Image 1: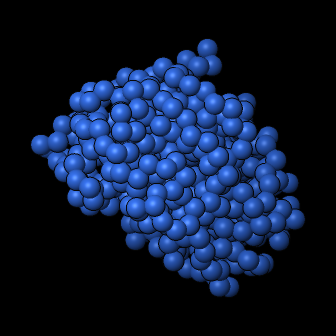
Image 2: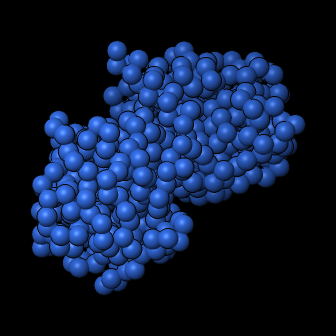
Image 3: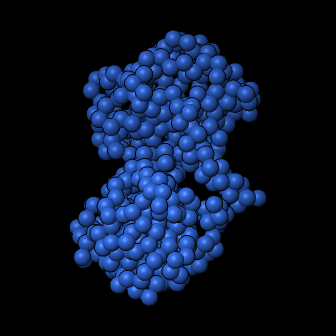
Length: 429
């Protein structure tokens, strides 16, 4: 039953990547300022919060008391809504670490408070509230989501895409109609409720997102369909890529719609902003469709690195193809032999990692190999991913330096370990 539910959640999230854009009310990336994506709810900074490296790009950093952002009133009264953000706490000494507030008055239903209270997620309309179950830690990036469903009259809080708390009794809708939004504090509420740490990618949608959508927002790091030559990330983090020397567009058939064709020694695709891949021992999954058209003296399929050129810094060749067409995959300390890849035939490859299950390789939805690996020593930096080329004569951990020649399609990166049911869903589009 559990695997069936996971399969349903993944299929739903895969098929509804862009559904939230239609309901998006505001989005603050905090890449150097507090401008709203739509220039409607632009923020004003109070008491000089700064900007630093975030989960994606930059984040707003609150380093001391009374720093916050204020924006115009956002009308969330008498309706469903979802508010999400990435948060990174540097202290939990305060009773309330306030993420988002809109508090007309300390009156029942009129003070929206989204906070970390006593180290737990907490959603409150003032008198109507729900609390999470998981104790948060400092110096860790968390995805948080606060959902109110007016039809169900229900509050839900999610941590890293997993339901962490939910009301069991009916909760009337939020009633606030005139207060400014505050990020990093809540006005008209308890004293000393400032957030100390960083907040990134804060968004408001005017509907209740489903569990599968929240899971996707929290754990789908990037998704590149490559349709019609697009190098845009269709996932929640907007990690758009660049490419050199590849063929793309309507004349390059993919496994699903269109693909990228790598057929020169200098061809590559690259994107930056992969924070979770830089965290040691953090679970991850890679999903990719490949169709080789030639064997080479070692074809690089996927590299993860701390710099754009792989001859410096931290670098790991996740996937490659040997001269005789054998797929290889790697950890920092070991290399592993995968299946033979047939030329001019599409293969779905998934690589997953968790401390519990180690490194697992799937081909066309079936588990091919499972390798015990209790630790993953990452770069501790925000990483690049590169497809089709090592971009270096010396290579990196994994050893094969030649270019891959063939098609690549439907490339996804996740910050969680996919189950076999998840992988099967991706292998059968």
